[in-house]
Structure formats: C-alpha cells, structure tokens
Length: 275
Image (cartoon, rainbow, N blue to C red):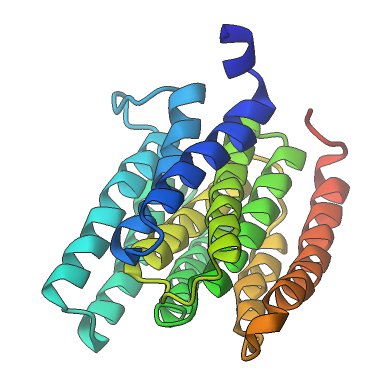
C-alpha cells in the first residue's frame, strides 16, 4: 500500500481525481459545496507528498494554507450574498497580495530591476486569474471545470519539465480535480452555475503555483502569459445542450495547443522532462 501511495502518478493524479470525484458527485446539485472538490483534490496531493505542516512556513506551505482558507471565504460570501463589485476587487487584491507573500523570500533577496518587473508580472497574473475565473461564476460549471483542467495540466506539466516534482504534482492535482469535477458535470448533464467555491479556489491555486514554478524551477517567464490565455478559451459558447461533449473536446484541443507550447518552451529552458 505504501508503494502505491508514494507513486508520483497516484499522488499528483489518481488520488486527487478520486477524492474530487467523490466530493463533486456527492454535492453536484449544491455548487456552494461541490467546489470543495478542487481544494480537496489539491490537499490530498499535499498530504501524500509533503504532509500538512506549517513550520517552517515555506512557500509551498503558504500555498497550502491559502488553499485551505479560500474555499471557506467563498462559501461565506455565497451564504451572506455579498458577491458584488467591492468583493470582486477585494479578491483581485487578495490574490496579488497572496503571490507576494508566497514569493517574498525570493523577492526580498533579489532587489534588482529584473526582479521588480518579474514581481509586477506575478501580481498582474494573479489578479488576472482571479478576475477571469470570477467571470465564470455564473457560467455552467462544465465550462469552468474544463478551464480548471486545462490550466492545471498546463501548470503541472510545465513545472515537471522545469524540474520541480512537487510543484508539478500540485499543478497536476488542480488539473485532476478539475477533470473529476468536469466528469461529474458531463455525466449528470448539469446546468448548474459554477459558484464562488469552484472559481475562487481554482483561481488561487493557479495564481500561486505557476509563479512559484517560475522562481523555484526552470519554467521560463514566457509561460506565464501563455497559460494566462488558457481560461479565456472557456468562454467559447455552449448554447446547444446536445453539443456539450463536442464543445468540451473543442475546448481541450485549444487548451492543449497552448499547453503544448508552454511545455515546448519549458523544455528549451530546462533541457529535459523530469520523470
């Protein structure tokens, strides 16, 4: 059993997919809780790799802490019905501040012009991912979960190629959890809105893991804007119910092209795939 649980494919793919599938399946009609599947899948990978610990508070542990907090903030917002322009702007700022906090050990030790512009790009990227995913809040969960899957695979694959097994697994955990959520939506033919729990949690993971991979692995900066484009493809129209599967495949093809470009550029930078 220990041999199975220490397998990287199980830790970063199979286990988070299964856990997210169970939660998404149990709460598929309650989007305020179904979105917990994303956080649960991510935390499953953390538990199987580094374990849950917060001392010392490393960058990856900061990411874990934020991912544990953000779903409950989202649930609270939905319960008190306070989703408005102010809260949207607040979480744009929150995501930007979060990436600063996560990467502060690197930023503070490199007071250069290059790091200043890199930091600025991370701030903009984090706010952008939060903005784009929050725009999906009232879109069908099928759309958002497709974007989550594509973004997670792109980030995780890039981090693995960039020689960070842990960050690669965390990114792939996002993709696996998104895939499980998508699978449930497709099977149930659900037309439920995405909800804040799904969108905010996914945005936070995407906003933090990729900048960390750029700083702590060999993922080139150019991957940042490429992956930032991926969730935009999720706004492809899904008007016809009988074409949901076809539309989903079309989305994955588009996202796959962008992910492949990110992988190629990372390979050129890092040299070879980390297996």
